[in-house]
Amino acid sequence: MKKPSVLVFILFFVLTYSLVMAVLLKVGVKAPDFSQKDQNGKTVTLSEFSGKSNVVLYFYPKDFTGGCTAEACSFRDNYAVFMKKDAVVIGVSFDSDESHVKFTKANKLPYSLISDTQGALGKKYGVPKFMGTMSDRVTFLIDKKGVIRYVYQSVKDATMHVENSLKELDKLQAPAKGK
Image (cartoon, rainbow, N blue to C red; front, top):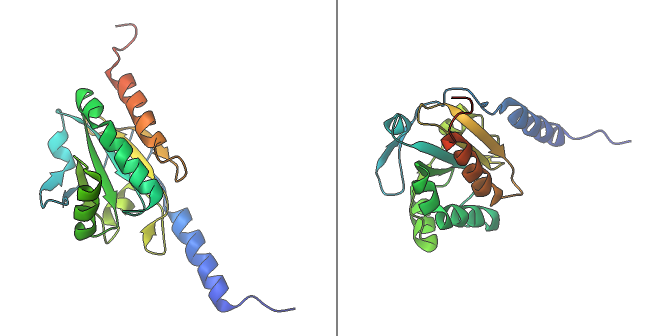
């Protein structure tokens, strides 16, 4: 009987380690601040939205892939609704600034895309990665106080990130019961 090769073992270890080590931030936790340039060279700083806007921060695997394009376009198609609900949308992937510029133009995206080529921002938020790319879609809804109020993780249901985020924004805006 053949023993598994060292390469298979290493691949299994890397996959398991990268997926296990990524622990998503939880609801109720203060969102880590960041300051990074978007596809237009504009600096986007999370704390600048404090007291002004809710933030929908979504991480996606790759520009120009079917699911990621559907997700980005779903955010685009609902962008005015997000704005009416006092929310800004920010997308993040490991793609380059150049790729984001092309992706934004091709899909007429009205919001910022951040290049996280080194994975530092994804790591702060616990977004899983494998073999140098984000291996999942994760959306964080961050309230005006900078606290994570909702987390949705699903690589399969790309457009559900938008639908779920809008529902959660409605909950944030609903008056507190009993007051």
